[in-house]
Length: 124
Image (cartoon, rainbow, N blue to C red; front, top):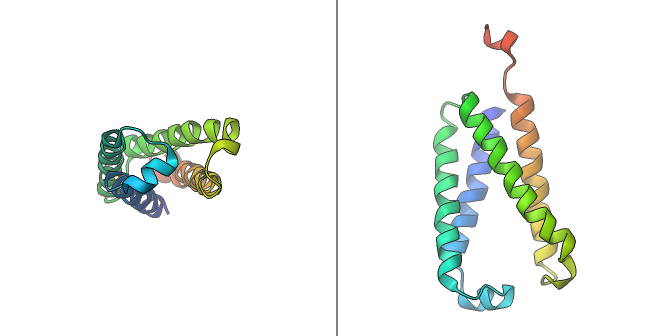
């Protein structure tokens, strides 16, 4: 279960990073992204985080699981506040998409916490 959480999260971040990195100028203008290089930098960072998460899925341990949960919850907190506060100013398709990402990453963070073996199951 924990490896599946890592794989799903990694795939989400890799695909999002690739999309941001190769963001078409028409979509950037629609979303209000003024300097396109900023989207490219963000895409590179998100892509690197996704690749790191995919690599961590091979042997998830406490540190990697904590980083996964922390990263997912930070993304949830970063996306949820603007969606709630300025949801009406977003393009009509952006709000449900962002809420879907928030829900999926929140569920994956909770699943990682619940799937991590307790001390008794790890034999400590």
